[in-house]
Image (cartoon, rainbow, N blue to C red; front, side, top):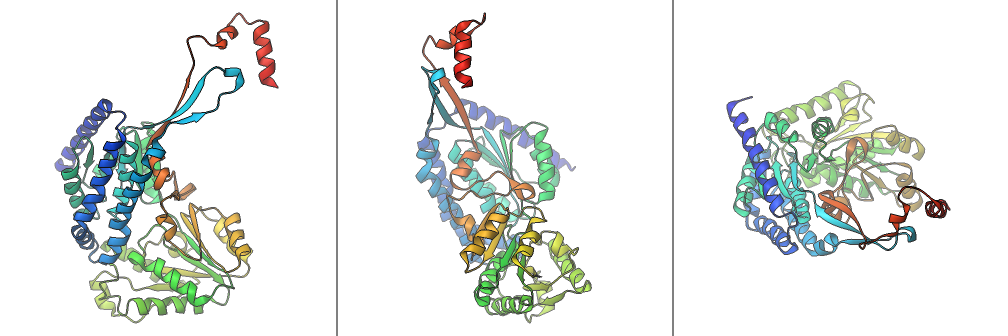
Length: 473
């Protein structure tokens, strides 16, 4: 560990203590102040939209401004506005029923902020995946510390500056640094730790948090399948799947990771997807609308995946492109891998790039079993005009979220909880689910000065027997 990292770790410990002290002085932040916090988030997004998009593009080497605007900046604004609109309803104390045997009495559920939240955000959507959890935490009345990915330093530094201008450090703080700082961050005694990233690192984060019994939300990933049934129009499936897979060059946790297509249709569907890609991006190597791969390491990993599948007998489909220019720009052209070996990396690891394996299935049972035999994915997509078949796929599979005849956009519905299940994550956020993630639902039962329960104290007698028998019925 470098001296700079050691200093940063000591600084973040001091920030945590300052935030905890500030929270103790304002355990129940008034709703009008929370709404003002959300207004500041929406405001800094609107005022600095160009700077945010430019920082993200700098980190990637190239990211289409349109993608950053819609998926990062506008997303956070809408999230903040939605939270503000519904905050009073979400924060309201709930009444709970009291059984006759416990009367007279009053029961209620108070929704109270947990305290200080730690947010670890990834590189693929470096602004949105830091700010959306922050919106939820601030809406709940919490304080927050954010540790952005070291792979997107320009975005991290910009967020740090913007949030420092908008909030005091004992309210919101951004901690930058490499893996050593990130590891130390996950070991802090937060009141809640929110992590978005890989399943592999997620296990380490959960283990670190467990040492302090810190509750965690893990937003992970996994291999999200797209099942196309024989009745669904091929061109429609190709357009939808190509859009979802190629948005942000496939560097999206809920992008279709592989396609299960009726046996014999794999090539035609794969070629249709490549044709759509070629129309959308006539030259992926030079088109500014086509996003680059975030780092040399990820670029090399994706190329190794493609080559391994090729060596294993899979056919690789790509549109015409300038290979040298693509390499110089760190761009992987849209790629379909036809029937790769089952043990190839493209079929066993989350791809996180514009590479799409295409696997044939004989019957729908086989496609459902294929999904069921693997870890539960973060998302599942089914394309079918037959509502019965679509419903069957939903009924017989499990995933964090799902969509029918579309992909990606389920996470944009404000009132749908977003999160994984099993290896793809635990816990959820967005809308009220996000508010509740950073909220403690505190149960309170109150009575008057005297309560009949006093009659049930030892020494036990006939009154106790009477009440016990009544409850046993």
